[in-house]
Length: 181
Image (tube, rainbow, N blue to C red):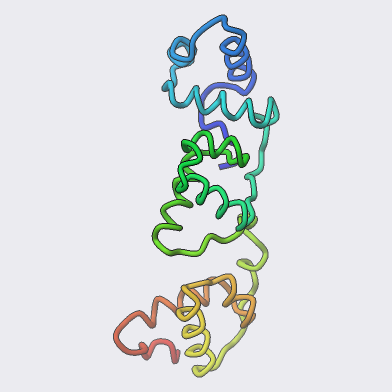
C-alpha cells in the first residue's frame, strides 16, 4: 500500500473537492456522491487535508509511528478524549483503521511496537547453518518472547524464513523430529 489514497480519484481531484467543501460551496454528502465514495471516506479526506495539507495525498511511503505515540493515542481514545477521527487528527495518524487496530492490540494485551520499514533488512538476512540444540534454543527464545521474530533474528543471526519454519515445526505437543533435519 504505497499511498494513503485507496481511491480511483486523483490527489488533485480530492484536494479540489475538499477545498470546495471547506469554502462552503458544497456539502460533504454532495461531494462524496459526486466523487462516488462514501461520506465517511470524504470525511477522512477532509481530516487528512486538515492534518497534513496537500502533501497528505501525495505521499508515496508509509508513515512510521513510535511506540510512545501509539500508546498515547490509544490511551487518549480509551480515556474519552475524542472520537477515532479526532484522535487521529490530534496525533497525526493517517487512518482510523490503524488506530482501531492499535486499540485491539492494546486491549488484547499485545505489545505496541514502533513501526518498521516494510521489507526491513533484518528479514532479508541470509540464514546460517544451525545445530539441533541451537534450533531448540532459537524456537524457545522466539516463543518466550511472544513470537518476536525480529528480536530472534537479531539475537541469533538466522533468517526470518528459518525462524518461521522452526516455529511451525515445533507447534506440536513435543518438539517435532523434523527440526533435526
